Image 1: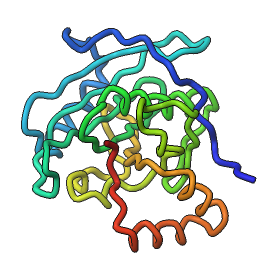
Image 2 (image 1 turned 120 degrees about the horizontal axis):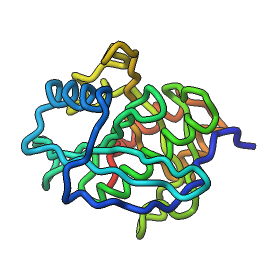
Image 3 (image 1 turned 90 degrees about the horizontal axis):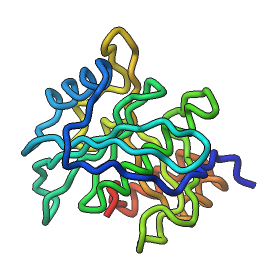
Image 4 (image 1 turned 30 degrees about the vertical axis):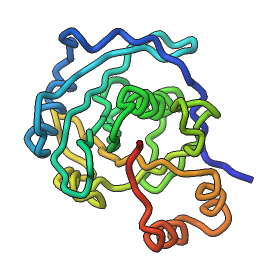
Length: 203
């Protein structure tokens, strides 16, 4: 039986990204830190939105192009900006960046709702619908940003604006991979993913 936490919110109303998103001081400082650490090719696009459910607060995210010779097309880093927790969740994607940011915001919302910090190595189960047309994504795994060569300049934790901010890379998992972890453990899953040379980005 799985004891992995579950993200339950699957919808959001989007405010649009064709405007300047007003960030608070901590969010702006986190954005500057990431801009200085990552080799973004172009401008950073920010957006704010609300998740479905009783909580009406807004979440903030951003995305930007990254240079990477391993991708045949331009990849993007999508990430949350700390709003209700001291966490920044990052993912690498080719497309559907707003859907990926929605998943990341749901993870922050889980921390807010349960008043606890998710640890590196934890798996979070997703609802049946998260990214349209990609039913293979069943859960996400939180890993150190250092394992991705594009993000390896981002530390696990960093003091920003007087607060200790945690950074985590979010990797999609299939149901089979999630079940394998539940049965054999985290280390066995990591060995399996490495043997299979699994892609650690969202499509």
